[in-house]
Image 1: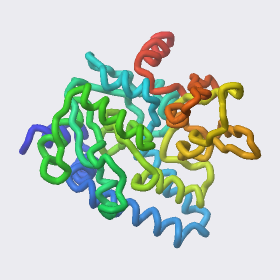
Image 2: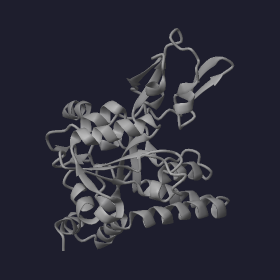
Image 3: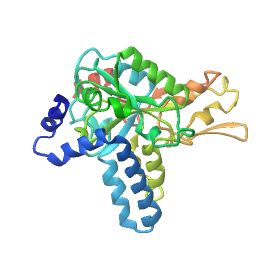
Image 4: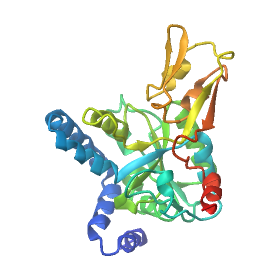
Length: 301
């Protein structure tokens, strides 16, 4: 048995069911994504009329979800030079889900990347690029990919600088940066995905599930909102094109911003040629997954 497999068993202890789920999730990731997409569609299409069914996506999303990251926040994660363990006690202020919310990075300089199973599930002519855009950070995830996913998903070890290049290129093509968490993988951070609405099962599942419950979401907002400079804005519409959450509209020659719909992904800001938009830490939203900020914030309490 490979060391990463032993580590999975050790992590879950007596919860063999979670260990098996962990094995299946990584070793058969493409099939896992296919089944997840199918089950979501079946649940929504066939059972949306049945009111108690909304408990199903709620239960799933509490165990498998993500935190949206700004470019600055993911940069801080991918340049860590020390272990980070912020525990669970206050993390729901950052990741508001019931089970998987542990912010932990062990040996963060150990990084792997592999092909995105969501993209691989699309027809080759329709999938988004780059395909190799999933990133595993640290001792809890990178060894699993490197030992078990080389052939299936072209997993390789990379440097922190190479990981940042993947983020940079993915964001250029409108990919949302996400930190994924899952109960079956230990409920902790360490997986960074670059998601596009065309391929991503999480985004698709959330959109479908909103037909059952409009308040449900598989992703937590970054914690930021956007300020608009009307003097600098030319109403070119690039920000509206970049926004995957319909938070920005150019309507009747006006900039219209829905702060509640905004996830703070920062793509609109990066797309604005006039530099008319600014990201700010919104005190009315969740804390961002900003490692430096959280260390200071949690030390207060």
